[in-house]
Image (cartoon, rainbow, N blue to C red; front, side, top):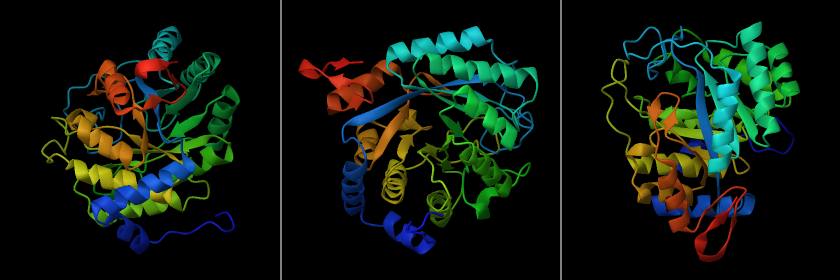
Amino acid sequence: MSAGRHVYTLEEVREIHDLPLTQLVFRAQSVHREHQPPDAVQLCTLLSIKTGGCPEDCSYCPQSARHQAGTPAEPLMDESAVLEAASAAKAAGATRFCMGAAWRSAKTGDPFQRVLRMVSGVRELGMEACVTLGMLNQEQAMALKEAGLTTYNHNLDTSREFYGSIVTTRCYDERLQTLEHVSRAGIGVCCGGIIGMGESIDDRCRMLVTLANLQTPPESVPINALVPVAGTPLASRPAVDPFELVRMCGTARIILPAARVRLSAGRTSLSREAQMLCFLAGANSIFFGEKLLTTQNPDSDADLSLLRDAGLRPLGAQAGHEGHYHL
């Protein structure tokens, strides 16, 4: 922990989370304007480069081989196809390209070398590169850094206390160890969680406490609402109230002022107004494109229209006359 950094407690974070919503949003927006461009939203595109067949038993995930979600196991994509997708994402306005592989831990040998080449290729396009490959050792983290990786995604999902109710094939400390390897390699950490899995409000706040108190806090914090998928153990969970997402975005913004707070899975169920409340509460990054690994995401044109109508701009774009953006 850096000298002089505030160490958060559950009680402090819960108090922030439970503020009257107008006060929470006002406070979060004030913090946001001190530390972030007030009108910019980063557009990130996520591609599943290796889908299905994962040996983990994460209760929310249709890619688990242990569930009956009907997601077929596919091989690792060709490098050329991945870089073609990255080029298309850049042309559409994305500045970060994220690649996800349904592995318990990063592979060795040829598959890992192929991923390294994908990372280098994305960086050569002038984009930020992010991967999520499962658990990493220190050597793998260093190799990814050398390839030019900007950020590594490895979500905690929920609190340590609730984690065993969602995943039994790995433990919380294994997640934290990978985050430590990533930080030691000098790669940015992208780490957040999912709400709506049956966890308590304290569980949500405990997760945020863990993130805020990491030796190197995450530079990106995805806030996901559970997308129930048939065939997974959480298929019957009720929809998340949009105000709960607003509260999570606002709380994350206040305690992690330098991070990008990414409004992630579950946006298809949000109205434009609900998404704008999340932006007002400090969210300043979204996944951009029609699919998030295996679940649906809002249409790209709809996202650009939403930003334009709200007077916001994609990060890296400058607003021109009549609200048109120049990328």
